[in-house]
Length: 118
Image (cartoon, rainbow, N blue to C red; front, side, top):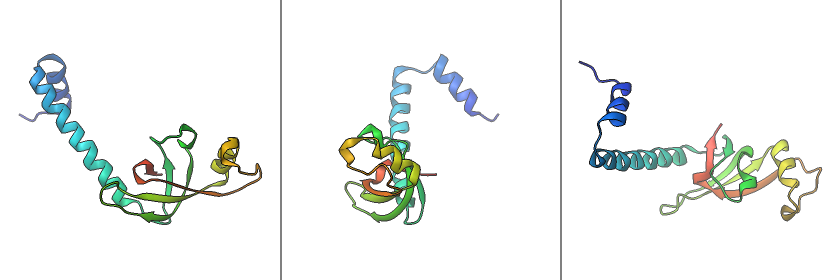
C-alpha cells in the first residue's frame, strides 16, 4: 500500500498526537531552512529577481536584476539589485529614498534571504 500526501494530511488532522505534531513542526522548520539556503546559494549576477519577506515593507514586491552577490557564511550575505523602471518608480514615491520621480533605475543592497528568483 502506498501512502499519499493526502493520507498523511488526514492522519495529521485526525489522529496525530501533540508529540507527532512537534516532530512535524521541527521537520518543517528544518526543511524551510534547507530550501532557503539552497535558494540563497542559487542567486547569481544577471538573474531576474523579486524582493520579498523584507523590511522596510515598501521594498517587498520590487523586481530587478542582481548585479552582484556578496556571500557571508553566518548571515547568508547580501545582493545588489538593480531595480527595473516600474520598481524604481514605486520606490521614488517614498520621500525617504530621495529619488527623482523620473528615475528609471536604482540599485538597492538587500539581505540575500530576501531575494527570490522570478
